[in-house]
Length: 287
Ligand SMILES: [Zn+2]
Image 1 (cartoon, rainbow, N blue to C red):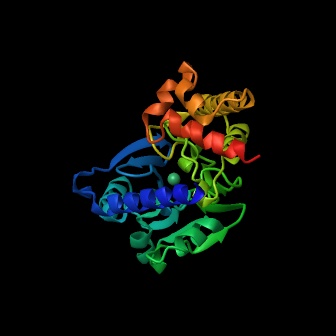
Image 2: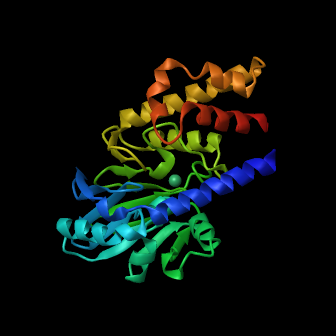
Image 3: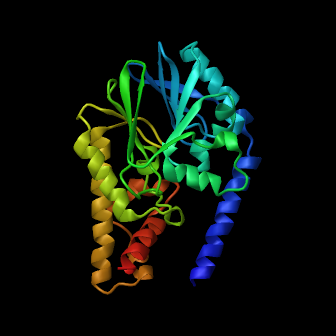
């Protein structure tokens, strides 16, 4: 059973890779949205990119896919004539780090949590230029364009190497895939877990000011209230599944009954309600 699961996961990952390599990026357009002060969000294909522009040059958070690097550079040039000095990676997934190989080779300094470098290095296809040059375990700060940009690792969540990035002056937070517009993807094969995922979201809510603007890993710009209802969804849906388990329900029964209607809108994305229930169930069964 376990081997079969791992196999199907491996097949899914290979398919995802092939998808990234084969897909036609020529049609993708990079759209820039002002977030606050000197911070912008770029959308194209893959994870949302956070951008800081100013007198020191340019810093980006995540860089989508390598074939989009030229378009990303052009979009950055429209915002600021300065040089791209830093790339911060929220985590190792290819739709957030694919551009590293291009920007790293052009002497941008890549910074990420230590496990991001470990996971990227363990893939034989990763070129040296794509690896983070500066790594940290818990936290790091980049003092850039007149503000402190904090990278904070809260332990395992979406993966085991996620950072929450806070532009403390502009009051903007980039959450990576710790916050997306749908039920979360918890990458258990990369050290992620549901409990840690929820803890991280709670910790962010405790720290950030009410008027902060939030860039999610995927989906439109968000507010602190959006993050609050996301947290509520996480707590209530996991509670719902655990209660059904305590009542002796099987995974199939819980999936057939579904989640409370209130959270239906979260199931339209990458992770549907069934897959989210399964993720919660499997983790809770291990205890
Ligand atoms: Zn991810």
